[in-house]
Amino acid sequence: MAEAVVANIYRRRLAARMAGGANIAPIAFMAFGDGGHNADLTPKAPSAAATSLNHEILRKPLAGITQEDLYSVTGKGVIEASEVIGAGISEAALLDANGQLVGLKTFAPKFKENDERYEISIKLRF
Image (cartoon, rainbow, N blue to C red; front, side, top):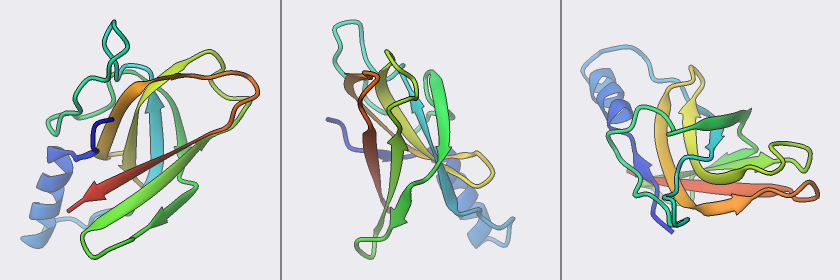
């Protein structure tokens, strides 16, 4: 499983804020997609140059967010049993309260059954 990456577009917003630019919105959403894997079902490498998921299929408010150490933040998203049944979830992203990408992660697809509830955590290291 690939480690999550902080998106360059977020790093640019952070740098601009440190130079007196616009405030940065807190991380508030997780997006889920089915475009994070190759045809052989191996995960694609996540790219810091991404501006969105490859193919977003669901966006939800975070189920939780924590700071486990001084240099990281972990967001947790939940897909309920009734959501995206049959999808092959293979990418997830943390988004700020304005819907802008902060970071993302890819993984081998998890094919969603109708009786399954998935929890996905993304840890971003700063």
